Image (cartoon, rainbow, N blue to C red):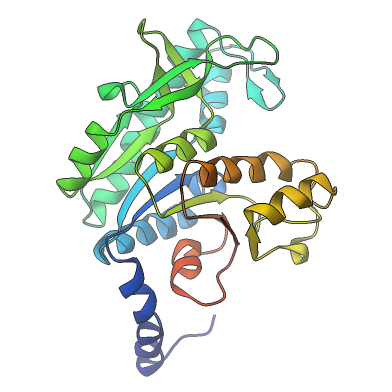
Length: 287
């Protein structure tokens, strides 16, 4: 590993000044998932990045996933896990287990990590303050209590942010009849970012970014306009598993988010490198 001299470290900070000035005060929503959540070294790196964003004057909001953890808990309880089109089939018992893992275990753990580095944070579920008002997922096969966001009530989020706290949101929603729904975390993050008028939405994933060949990291697209993204899908340049990722990014842009960033959480300090350097490390989609 190459170690920077003190002067080189100062130079890095000086180079970041234009970005620090530009982004101070903006809201950035971070969808936290993948290996960066379970690998201790990567987790520490990501948490430190979020902490530094806060110290640099940004207003971070975290929406976390937890599919692997939910599956592990279901396995312990001897309950079968079944997926259809990448979504977990969720009966009433599975919905309760998912809420327990997401809102209880994962959310509280992330808050603890942030508090250790001096950042005040609060873990909430989408049910708290009816933040994520949900409905049963429309179209396709019946997946049980899998929902989609119908509306985001930002009252609680704004109160926490204005008081200096980082909200850590579990993607569990509720409908008008108090029915609990498990929500895809990527789309929950998109809905939250749109409702908060966030300038940036960052997806922490296990891929380098948007690739034209999912098996070749060298085919990464560094910048992609909304129009180009739609053309690349229709032309078959973006295919397979990349399509849902891009569609989720397009959903965020449609909701008014200025730019969406897809990063590999296996890259140490990926968030800082993407926001505060010229080159970045992932893919940025923009209107």
